[in-house]
Amino acid sequence: ETGVTQSPTHLIKTRGQQVTLRCSSQSGHNTVSWYQQALGQGPQFIFQYYREEENGRGNFPPRFSGLQFPNYSSELNVNALELDDSALYLCASSLDSGGNVFGPGTRLLVL
Amino acid sequence: GENVEQHPSTLSVQEGDSAVIKCTYSDSASNYFPWYKQELGKRPQLIIDIRSNVGEKKDQRIAVTLNKTAKHFSLHITETQPEDSAVYFCAAHLGGADGLTFGKGTHLIIQP
Image (cartoon, rainbow over all chains, first blue to last red; front, side):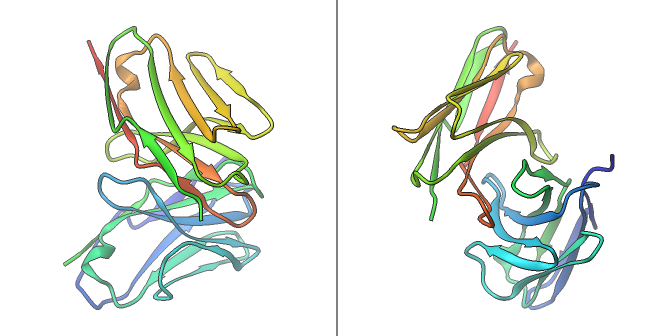
């Protein structure tokens, strides 16, 4: 069984740039969610993908977008980066409404 | 939307003692309550979860209790060990396509 993997592990961008983060789901999982975890805080739900469609979204603006591919891997895209976007971005996969398994995260720093 | 409050923010206990972390949630429709352990620089790891049709669940030294009427749930760790030191997060899930709503975390420190 393969766990959730994410790439890259770390990333530095400047304000206004765009970034793409990637995630491979755990084998057998069909749902992927993305979370943003600011330093010292709990993860915050960005959105969820199921069968390649976004089917749930938290309180994040449209410049946060995503994709899910037929093999259940996923991307998170953030446009027009702001300083406050600096955080750990976590991908989580699950099977239907089962427990979420988190990836190691991508630490994004926006300068 | 759902709101989860978690207390305390920091908990220091002597090795071998018990630790209790408490969470409350706002939406009575929430039906799934996982607990995650996150060590410094690592991913959150699911340690135990409970669904709304169950009042208590135990796994070795870890137990979770749920009071649906009061809308609160608690994590109990007995016989604490140094490796239990970490940040613990509770979460609530409304189900379907809603994501998990997390508490702000409890930094558990096990004193030798």
